[in-house]
Image 1 (tube, rainbow, N blue to C red):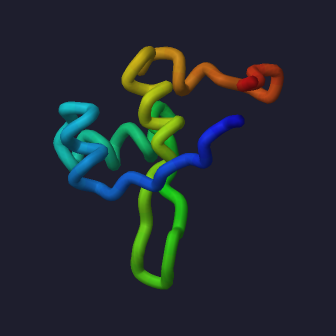
Image 2: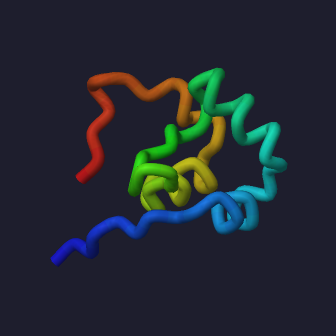
Length: 71
């Protein structure tokens, strides 16, 4: 059975990726980093699976299209 995604907050994402906050936001604007998701009125986070996939291959994130499927 597949485990549900955990939601990672900013500090955890920065630790896992080694990016600075400004670099992370710049990559999000460029479409080369996973987008944030809203988890409450003022809270946001990232899906752990998206961050893991980005860490495994950062250059491939921006080149995904509708024909890329995850199992």
